Image (cartoon, rainbow, N blue to C red; front, side):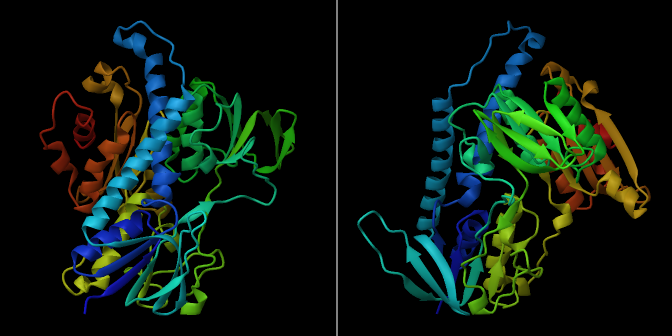
Amino acid sequence: MPVHFVIVGGGPAGVEAAATASRLGAEVTLVEREVVGGAANLWDCIPSKAMIATGGAIAMTHRSAALGLERAPAGVDLDALRERVRSISQGLASSTTRQLESQGVRLVRGSGRLVGPHKVQISPYEPEGQPVDPFVVEADAILVATGSTPRVPEWAVVDGDRVLVTRQAYPPSRVPDHLVVIGSGVTGVEFVHMFRSLGSRVTLIVSRQQVLPQKDPEVAAALESDFLATGVKLVKGARAVGIERSGTGVVVSCDDGRSVAGSHALLAIGSIPSSAGLGLEAAGVQRTESGYVPVNHHCQSSVPHIYAAGDLSGRLPLASVAAIQGRKVAEHVMGLHTREHRHLDYDKAASAIFTEPEIADVGLAEAEAFALGRKIRVTKVPFATNAKAMIDGDPRGFVKLVSDPATGVVLGGSIVGAHAAELISVIAVAVTAHLRVQDLSETLFVHPALAEALSAAAE
């Protein structure tokens, strides 16, 4: 008899787990209540990057004079932008659905909850006027990958009009005249860039003394410099504690007595796991006080045949991490872990921030190494010395490599600049494969190319 694998949640983790397990011979049922691809396709990763790409195109017109072009003002067609976002999300969801169905995965649109260690109750989506009764399926293995939702503090009342969470901004009904962004982490700074590019005045409330508090200070400083150059106002060392509607706008109050008035406020202060109502307790699965499901290196919960992946697992909240977790779960369910098997090393996950310019990093950061008292070698090359960056008219940013001074092994790196999200892949491979800086410096890159900065930083 084939292994019956039930997956609750069709985001990156669930989709990858379903595809891999089906390919390996499992009988797979995937339950998703909204759209295949999950929040990544519907609200988060894909829609936001689609809007950021539009903002980037507008920003490029501002630099067009440097390329020998007459500058032409670019406006935003919100209806066209909305249709673009919708079509990209729908297209990805449709192609993923077709792929899974062609692999024999049983897709059920609805919600799922555990009603026992090996039982999942599925409540199918009910089209208007067509009620559908819930049913229970037996499972040899279960994966819960239901993601997370934006965190809304007690002092904020989200109305979807003037006070928004990120998922209500793809795109909004109108471009805000003055947007106050609360939260200076990855999501917050991406929205600052996005709406500034679309023409909004933007104020960013920064609870600490730098944006991106978890990132390399030099990287954060480069982003702050660009924000200030484009007119973004930074309110540092202030924590938002209240939002009041005021006529046709909002007033955000901070814990130090300062207040910021704007037309709209956007909350970007993290997320909470979507673990309520899943019946985890009925199956004996432990949760933390904050709602995450603790997992081991196989993504197993406290009940060995029940797995958790993606945001629910409390590991890195990245779609790329969720997808590879899903693949590893499927391989474990099908017994492949008994062969040669590499565990996930979350410290080597590459990440990117799609601001203008882009930011990307992987592995050990310079500041982290110093905090640990670890000896490192740091080399840095500005894109201002790179021919392709100058040809493209955008020489902002730099490449920074962190390596072991004794062995030359690449330990990490940061990139600020155009196409950083693509270029970081080279350093990610080097970190994962324990390559040396010499391996990068002796690689024959294309000329002229931005990637040559990687080779220069390795010399």
